[in-house]
Image 1: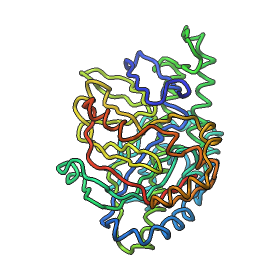
Image 2: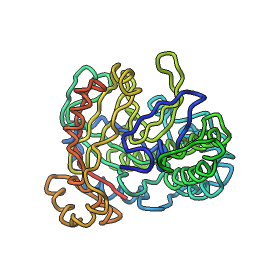
Image 3: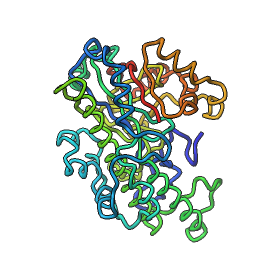
Length: 392
């Protein structure tokens, strides 16, 4: 399911003569996930879970269309689109080390800010450092099990370690970029003599005006998403510091799962579309979240992924039930209570949104991750268990 490509779709197209398709990337450009690791254990944090839940929910703006504390003027917005997480570092809201642990350093360089519409910029101007709704979350976890000691050591992970997962994207700005360019590309199909089985697959030759402009705008939206997750990290670190003093939260890795990148395979440059698919290069941390009631996993990319799947794996457990169906079937108050009985504190802006994201609406993440490992695309390193969940 999904607009254009199915979620979990990966397509590699010849560069520069191939096409680029917004439906092959999705509306939430650079929706992605990061894991922040602490030096504390579950035992040292469990007594503060209620405090963490309350403080994080208060500090982090969440929900549909919800704005944050930062209001960007036109010039500043253009700098964010141009520089991504680097802009956040320049403002003093990030550590230098963070950028080394983000895919592409938290910045794509192929940006022309004039390709992002004023409407898209307007939608994003107060959304930096915000969570949004849907399947986006901030989650305090504990490392429940180490599955590969060697890689865990390299990644700085240990048994019972506390940490934080952050999952969000480019908010209204990215959605508007996709909306704008799907219209532009549908209008240009005849011009480029493209006959498609479905208009959701609207695309344009990469080196056409429409193709180049979309790639530039998408890169800007991707940078906005990296800046957004970096600002959220600043909020989370503030809360962590207030509760735990000088204990640090360091970034293990931040990886995108709705994006197009120019990559090289077998000495050939390709336009790799990933939609609901995570980059999994050899040796790279790969983060696959489950649901708010189940495990999430940290894996490491394997060589075979470069041959079999253009360095990609799935981006999560995947849904088995639509949001509408889950919303009707699940009683959110009962769900909240069930999760709390399992020791998971949930704070959500919308009870309906909570029901839509119920664990029963998703596949079993253990099965999904086992298949990824059996296929040789990535290797399991650690399993995480949720303690506190913040939803929009």
